[in-house]
Image 1 (cartoon, rainbow, N blue to C red):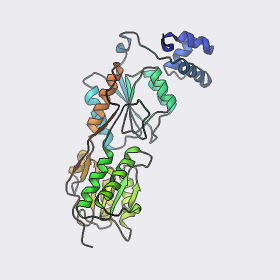
Image 2: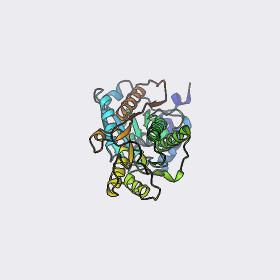
Image 3: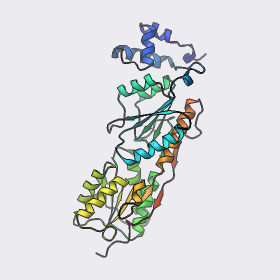
Image 4: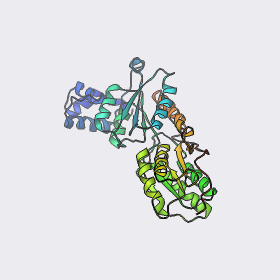
Length: 340
């Protein structure tokens, strides 16, 4: 019989030299346990491969929740993710708990303790990940998790849902090169985020494909927000050899570029072509309507929610890595370069 079946809470308590209620508090994420004691209990849990198994029907009687965790959600794309989660969770009568990590890509232990206390059906992490010890703590409580748009290389066995970021960078840059632009700049997201690097790789591949020299001086890493697009856009557009086109790694950064161009007296698309990324609802209503790469944010979130709810029911996904297709949406912010 496997060790995980033989091990009991009472056995862990006896080994560590604490009471059964103390072990139960650790399992449930209660804060009223001394850190040293908590560490000893967690070590014993890991050593024995203990995993909580709910009594039949007990978990269903508790509040049915999923945790939705953003590294930060001060942008409209986060609303699209929330809508996608609710599209699946709502009909399933599952509540959604929102958390924000203040820009960090890994939650603090205090957050995890709160999650363990709520005992959700599962956790959905957006542009975030867990440390090895945090993953193990969720696993021992039988709380599955899924990562949407992983910040780094996901560990083996962790389900992830994303989009074809490399292809998105490729088609955006291919479009601009096809219009005749040769000085094409890129403002991607943070350099420590995988989707940012993938979009840059696609951008570079388009130059290789077209046989056009690539200038590393035109590559910038932003923050996915308007301010980053504005700062980098203004710096690029005041260069003596300014680019004639900019591929922004998010629609919000594209808005920042448009503002920088406007302040510098540059017309879009007559003097400067701009491509965004995400295809947020407002992009077709701004002036000029934004050419952008459609990222299926709503579908990504819905897919992740279906996976985490299936995992909560004991089902295993057939595919641990899902990358949904991206699509170039051509509108009014791109045209052939000016004759200069």
